[in-house]
Amino acid sequence: LSKTAETAAELPGALKSGEHISIMLNAGLSAELEIDHDKWVEGIGLYRTEVPFMLQSGFPSEEEQVAQYQGMLQLFHNKPVTLRTLDIGADKQLPYMPISEENPALGWRGIRLTLDQPEIFLVQVRAMLRANAASGNLRILLPMITSIDEIDDARHLIDRAIHEVEELLGYEIPRPQVGIMLEVPSMVFLIPQLARKVDFVSVGTNDLTQYLLAVDRNNTRVANLYSALHPAVLQALYRIMTLAKRVDLPVCLCGEMAGDPTCIPLLVGMGYRHLSMNGKNIPRVKYLLRHLECNETEQLAAQVLQSSTTSEVRYQISVFMERRG
Ligand code: PEP
Ligand code: MG
Image 1 (cartoon, rainbow, N blue to C red):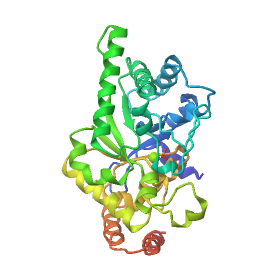
Image 2: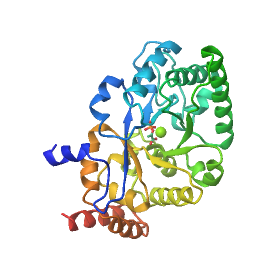
Image 3: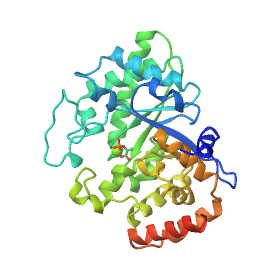
């Protein structure tokens, strides 16, 4: 990592032309491991709670979860911390909850599983709410949402958990913001309806790519077909941003794309202003942002959105990058 990139990491996320770009962290381990990153980011855009679950030999108790989440909420106090509810399934297994399915990506995973097993969901949400009682910076993120009904059902359980925690503590607790992962294509077509149900969305380009292209993200045989730079994925991302702006729905993007320098000018040009990524990508992304003019990224996006193939998209991005050295 060059000295300049490291210096850029500590500066706020911004373009050369001055526009602010909010940089958030994707996390999944303990707070101690993220201590170095807290000064680089405006909060946690995605905390994958299944990661600590995977490292255990059985379901962590509510108390254990409270301690885990409190570490994160307090380390990033005054900044939003987005805890995603358990996103497991046959493709992301817990050793103590084996699931075997023919089509794991299309099967029992994410919110589908936790709505069917509400006790797992309630214990987890209560732990989040208790951990947040003092800090008040929690945002709850629901994975794999496919329909508005699932949001209603999940919010109903969250309300119940709020009630239970207030009974337990004997005082009113802060209400968390609630959002969903926008990663199943059905939700791309329901943005106005979503805006009435959630406080924010976070675009999961890893799964959105998998589902739009019908390419299993874990199958090496079809890995060459998997690309977030497929023109149809880019059309979806542009549509999400355009429609969300119209209904004032806050949008973050937390898939791997957000930390990929090749994708950054394009995302900025399409209007993305909140990006959440792994810590290791933050210095170079911030460095690159500081060399971009807003209008040139908009021109790039306009041009790329006319493309018919992934290779055309890649070519246009490489010309853009080379031109600017
Ligand atoms: C995604 O799908 O883009 C995402 C961020 O979530 P995960 O990679 O954990 O499925
Ligand atoms: Mg996902």
